[in-house]
Image 1 (cartoon, rainbow, N blue to C red):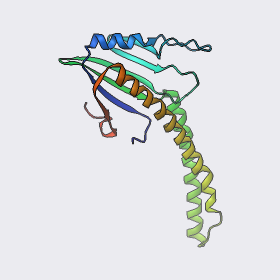
Image 2 (image 1 turned 180 degrees about the vertical axis):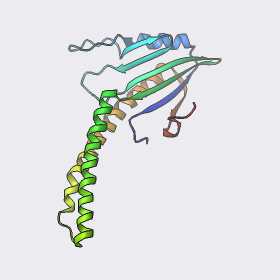
Image 3 (image 1 turned 90 degrees about the vertical axis):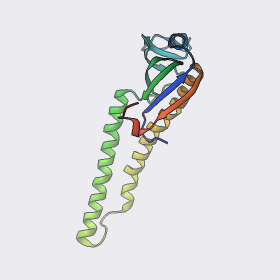
Image 4 (image 1 turned 180 degrees about the horizontal axis):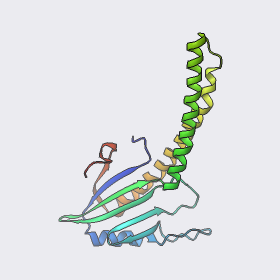
Length: 181
């Protein structure tokens, strides 16, 4: 399991690029800032233009960690390939990086103090349980980020697999993050 909230997929389909675009367009409505009640008419909101799309799933509830999905539909000899990238919203990523970074620094500061005291005096001047609170906060924040993101990304992967009638779906791992493909 990938431990960062970022996913890349390549879906191979027997559909032509035009058919794939039309199928996606049929499940897509323009993005709105506010939705009132059950104003959902389609599954996703966003835009699709010339085979390049930027969408997100329309939710009844709020999930700030839901994936922002960018992709492109490419024509191939035997159908099409759909390249998809899922990531949290940039503001959520920045906020969580600052939040988790602050908690990690707090944890390391307490750990440094405990180790320095032990080296200087041979005894602990504070309790090792002081590490529990920042450690638990870090695990909780990171678990919330990753869990909520993965929950929604699994739904979107299943949707796209079915929508494009995938004959093959490759999930690119972290080693492929900066590489070719």
